Length: 306
Image (cartoon, rainbow, N blue to C red; front, side, top):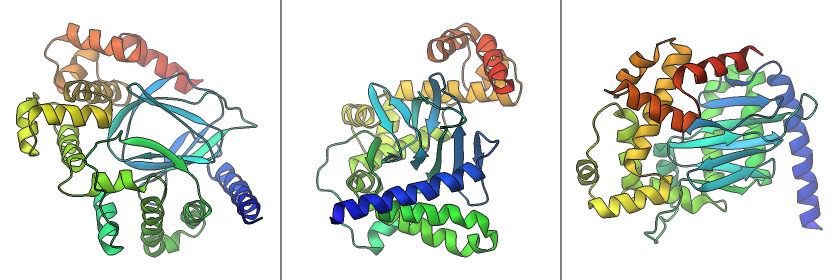
């Protein structure tokens, strides 16, 4: 009986969430809003697989479903399962089914792992004992308390004067709900200073800020206090990529942004992200995005205009 009552309450909350997001996302695709680190998104039609770098974040859908691939790992989530990302990870994303009548709508809340570590300390939540690394992305069950907190955060968009005071409080509650939820241990590993997962996370932070620089894996491993072999093993376990593959994807993603948003030509964009050879840049770009730079950017602009 209790299970049925909880399910009914969750259905009711999801219905309210859908109605609110349908109003807030009308006419938009992906949009940041007045609440820092909160992004609203909506898809009214299916999408082709496309690449993106996910930030540490919680993604929660009001309706529809979304597929995300991280290397060989595949994740699908819907209104009953959230997507939790604890690292900056290159991915391939796709919305397999959506229409104006049945859109895919949801929110992404970007997470600051320093806040996660602080919440662990405030609540005296123990760090995981296992040293084994796990993928930096997973799905978890949407619970009524988590959905309620996310919905209250989104509801603040209707009373912007309350955002500066209430948004940080609700953010902390959401982080707490994640930490005590079924995937909380994964967050605790990354946030636990001194753990190997945390050391890899530090290396990823350095790569994200310095991806245009030449990469010497041995030096980066030494910088975070790990042997090269151990670093390689844990890095691949958490990102499904080697450090060099990870750097390459960051470079190519940024080059794509420079061409699409800043209207740079391929040679300039490739050089600015660290490529010295235009032919190598074009070759690796085509391998990741499925078409040479000029054709890929033309395709993206046509898609945006349609």
